[in-house]
Amino acid sequence: MLIELLIALCLLGAVVVFLLPDEYAPFGGFVASLFPLVTSFVLWYGFDGSGNAFLQGGQLAYETDVEWISLGQYAVNWHVGLDGISMPLVVLSTVLTSLAIVTGWTPIDRQRSGFYALLLFLEAGLVGVFSTLDFFAFLVFWEAVLIPVYLLITVWGGPRREYAAIKFFVYTNVATLVMFIGFAALVFGLGDSVTSLDLPAVTQALRAGELGSLGGVGAGTLRLAAFAAMFFGFGMKMAVVPFHTWLPDAYTESPTPVTVVLAGIVTKMGTYAMLRFNFTMLPDIVEQYAQVIALFAVVTVIYGALLALSQHDLKRIVAYSSLPSMGFVLLGLVAYTPYGLSGATFQMVSHGLLSGLLFACVGVIYSATGTRMVGDMAGLAGRMPVTAAAFVAGSFGYMGLPFMSGFMGEYFIFQGAFDSFPGSPVFTAVAMFGIVLVAGYLLFAMQRALFGEFRVDGSSTVRRAAVHDLAPLVVLIACVIVLGSAPHLIFSMIADAVGPLLGGGL
Image 1 (cartoon, rainbow, N blue to C red):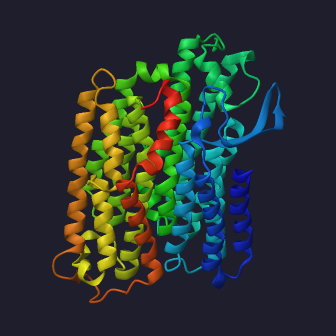
Image 2 (image 1 turned 90 degrees about the vertical axis):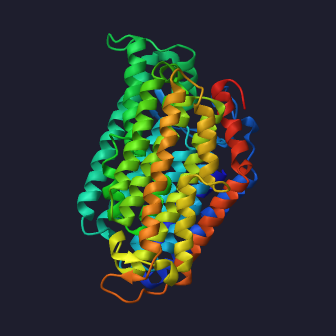
Image 3 (image 1 turned 60 degrees about the vertical axis):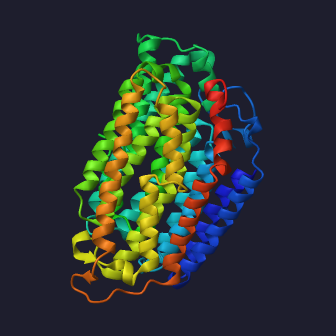
């Protein structure tokens, strides 16, 4: 019942913080976030991936499967559990939520109780998405994440917050609807083969070839249509080009703590769900249309990098820099090899840490200087050495330098993708060229903003960063270096989880 305890602690913390006076809410929110954080590390410490058999009827770690409600002929169960794919993402959720709360101590100066309560509510939804194994419960948690993100952007966002929040809500809601249609088509097409919305049961029935026709549509067409619908829904959430246009507005208008969680974890809901639904349930479609999917991945890498190159707002540069990383993840998934899938999952965690680090840096710089425009600042490294060092470290991680988590994620992806399907060497080589573009725009931003003679337009000084502003940066840098130096800390559990999907391990 540890997963249930983790979710309950998030919700209980949200209620308690909401009732606190505003002046106590920041510290109260941080303390409340420590309980889920410690619980997630207890889960990690005691994690046993040996029973990980999503396709073989085995038992997942901390699994609970009890009857919940009945929807006609389909039973809905409270079915939660963790494997090596979801475990790192649950820990990432709790770590980034605690750090995001600390990054909000300076910039959030009104209605603090509501702000931190919504962050903790969001954390509960994220843990639920990554741990549930029933589609109905998955949909409940998926939608539950949407509510706090919308409110956090609308109430505490920037000047264009209402536009960004509505755009985010509409895009992701449409994506959810289309994804739901795709999954429902598969369940109804299976007929009496399944009597529940249990994801492992549906997956096993699909892999056993029990899908029939539905409404005069043959099984082959139905599989392809369902795959396309789910790919659209999850691709929208992970911001694959051309479904990415909600991302820069949402990231830019969100306050720093929300951006850290949004970029670090919420987009991982799309990559995680795409792995669970598209690539686990319908691997034959992946194999058949690998080149098409890889084209989406490569375009996301190159086009996202070019968009970042054309930006002058530091936050929009970091926002667009997420697109190439999501393209790399998709390339690793479509490779459908042990290293490809493991690398993609590792990259989800790595990108969560690196994007959180860079967005936190941008928040500190904006609080200190009052501007995010690269052309309005120079020489910040002399006045803000810790923040500058953190931004450089995060940028190097994005560029894939050794001993940083980004290097290991990209290495595993490229190794797994290079010889995986016809034409994959070409797709992989083009995607690798994207690293050069990533280095180009990040070096441009670093050189202009951090080095040279000090200058900030409209001010001769910068505000001194407090210890609590810098602490999240130090923690995130440590995490990035630790994972880059000792990737086996999570890579082995990930590899154990993807092995059953492919009928073998590394």
